[in-house]
Image (cartoon, one colour):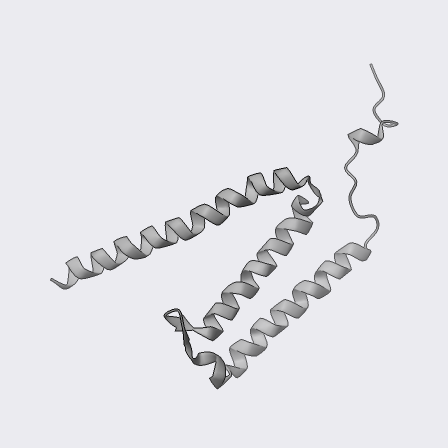
Length: 117
């Protein structure tokens, strides 16, 4: 039986210690604090319409997606993988989510028209 403990290619090169988790914590805390502050204050200038919804909602969506990306990159270790693997995972998501959102809104609008007749 072979001993794999001396083979460095068998080990995942991840962050050492707890400094990285505190960095992740502070970044996610800052983004969440901005989201909560914007939710409480609701600046008038951000309530103007942008692509059919308020600019504030667009900012919330972007901040939430940024947090989701950072969580996946750090805690699921996707950020430490090869670029080809990262694209293999993210490209279908980038393509499918807008497509499924379009289909959901289109079909939902059609159902709304049918229900009102």
